[in-house]
Each structure stands twice: as C-alpha cells, then as structure tokens.
Amino acid sequence: MKAIRFADELTIEDIPQPEPGEGEALIRMELAGICRTDLEIVEGYMGFTGTLGHEFVGTVVESPSDEELIGNRVVGDINLAPWVEDSVQQRHDPDRTVLGILGKDGCFAEYLTLPLENLHLVPDAVTDEQAVFVEPLAAACEILEQVHIQPTDHVAVLGDGRLGLLCAQVLSLASSATVLIGKHRTKLELAAKNSVRTLNRHELTEADHSNFDVVVDCTGQPEGLEAALNLVRPRGTIVMKTTTAVSPKVHFAQVVIDEITLVGSRCGQFQPALDLLRRGLVSVDDMIDAEYSLKDGLQAFEHAARPGMLKVTLKNDPS
Ligand SMILES: [Zn+2]
Image (cartoon, rainbow, N blue to C red; front, side, top):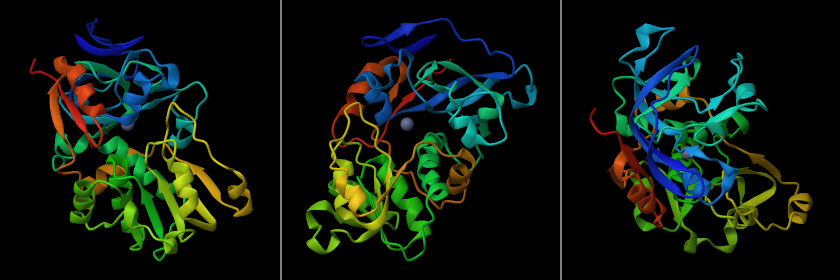
C-alpha cells in the first residue's frame, strides 16, 4: 500500500499493509488532514520517523474481536496506551505511543490499525469532510476541561489558523465575550460567518493590553506566547496550544510579577467534538483549501506549508 513516510525526508513509499493485532481494527483511510504538527515533524519536531498523519476518518475493514464494527465509519483517538477508564491518564501514559507522532505509524496511508477502544463511530449526519476535523476540534474542547470559563469572561483567541477558528467557536459557546484576533481578512470573515467576534491584530489598542481573563495562543509561532502575555490581565490565564520545533523566547518575570497561570493544552476527547458537529453548534464548512489524492501527497504537503492555509486533505484512491 502507499504511505507518506518521513525519515530524513518526506517520501511516498510502497509498504506492506499493516495487520490488526489483538483488540485492534484495520481501517481503510477515507480522508485525512495535514496538520501543522505534521509540518513541524518534517522540520524535526518529536524526532518521529515512519508513516505520518493523525487526523483521519476511515472505514473499518477488519475487526477480528468485534466484527459488528466492519463497514462503519470511524475517527480515532491518537494516543495509544494500555486501556484505563480515564482517557486523560491514557493520554499521559509515559509509555504511550501517538498515531503518526510518536512510535506508531500514522494515517497518511491506504490502511492503518488502531485499538478498538480508540475508535468512535461517526454519525450519519457528519460528512467525511467534517469528521476529518474531529481531532483538532477535540483539542479545542479540551480547553473547557482545563479552564473554567465564566459566561462574562473576556477571552481572546490569538491566531486565525484552523485551530484558532475552532477554539474561537467552541469558546464563544462558553462566553459571548470571546474574540478571535487574527491577521487574515478571509479567515476573520469565515469566523464572523460562524458568529465569532473578530478583531484584526492591527486594530488592537492600548486598551486591549492586560485586558483579557483568558488568552489562548493558537498562533503556531514562537512569538505567540509573548503576544498572549501582552493581552492577559494580572492573575489571568494563558492556554498554550502552540507547539513549535523552535522554543519561544519569553521574559518569564512577567509571568511571576503578574501571577499568570500558564496552561499547556494538547488533545481532547472525541465524543464532545462529534456531538458539536452533529448538532451543528460548530461549523467546519469552507475550511478545506485543497484536496489531494494520497499518491500526490508530496504536493499536498507543499500546499499545506504555504502561508495562510487552513486545511489540506488527502483522499484515499478508490480500491
Ligand atoms: Zn493535528
């Protein structure tokens, strides 16, 4: 089968189809999304080698321990660890592997395997083009598990990329005083269409300085944390969503002096994200810039790396 692999460079290779192990399913990838993290891995983040990709929707084709799953559309939790009741504990298991990121071949291939407990059925009302956003949408929902946002809190989401757009929609459900701060007119317009208040970062004034109870850094840039520190009020909270291969340069004295709470935030639970999509409370329509066939994956990566891209997807060719 074809797979997009990374070792020293990005390649498309023919590799053997994986076989589902005990308690695993074999999934045919239908649609996968290239994420900022994938681009960072190609830059050396995580030191990962193998098949890339962690955002997908697929169809179960083999499931020896639960044959009823065969033929169902699924999305999959990306953290793999011995199953425990608490998915948060699983996410932080020191021996975990992570799909396409850490020690486990990912979804930019015709087929992938995942344990059954990682799989979530996709409701009929949710299309493949919507379901491919479940993983980043779950990451947006995770903020509400970590930070108690009051309905009157001033919340700023920094960065109008894909994750910023999703976080702003989710947090707008929690506080109507949520604003997305970005620099791309078309993306801010897209957010506004989905009932999100927006502000071009050039329109920020002195009054916005130290004015926000919660600031979420979704810039994907090492400078994002410094910008967030500029906006958060004393004793406020910064949610850090940016992971870059380069470490940010920050004067941490301000964190101490202003008693800022820094919250690192990564993955979330899939079920709330699927529910938001099914109920139409979050829209991911118009967020796909381009769709490529898996075999044209290298061009797809080049496209995804262009400035200002929201989402480039990879489609499996009909078998
Ligand atoms: Zn991702």
